[in-house]
Length: 284
Ligand SMILES: [Zn+2]
Image 1: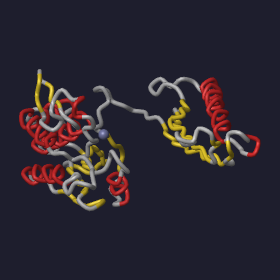
Image 2 (image 1 turned 135 degrees about the horizontal axis):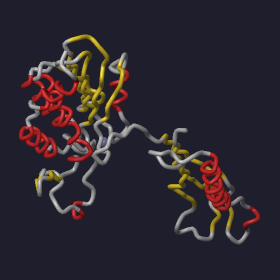
Image 3 (image 1 turned 180 degrees about the vertical axis):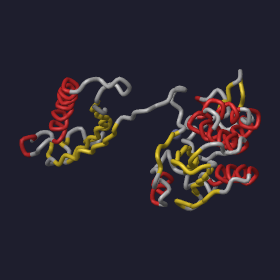
């Protein structure tokens, strides 16, 4: 059997860079921003574009809607011999373009300047999606000279509730999978570790009172302040007890939302206060 390197080289000859850039531009021009207020505010047109490409290439796929107008596509590219399943994952949705005046280009024109393609989703992650599609195409043209299965997971709703990823798992597509490469951007580096994330909502119930008689009330804002101060102490304690992770850095505990009182009611102790904590854990 030829070496891994020679097989990689053989496949690389089949990467059609011009077609890849053309497909990426076409995909960036599709506004696959989820917006239930727009009839086409979903991934459908982007998924149809990918499906058309797969049809052209003669790659069979499984297509299933995880929500109306929001399909997942899964492709299995079987190697010559049986072996492990390796998943490559990409998503078809993008986040909103936000404030258009802050852009120096049209976010959905896929303009190329100095060899770079600009637009919403060019980086996160239609670039990665197209790269994995054309890599698979190159493997196919080179005769799928490997053992195992390359599975492409082209998923919806990554930027929202992860309906695509949840649907992928619920459909049993992850069963027997040996490894997965998520083609999200990571500064051109392979990312092999990830922080854990906990979002904690703290609700404080006090007792409302007029500001001139504070002793009749229980002020949840004072308690909120104590918790915020305590967060800094806990963060320092955990950091002192756990080493800095080489890739992930340090544990963090960050208050991100604090809500209490009404702006027009400066003379009232509010009944409730709310705090959101964003907690990021690192592996040992
Ligand atoms: Zn992404």
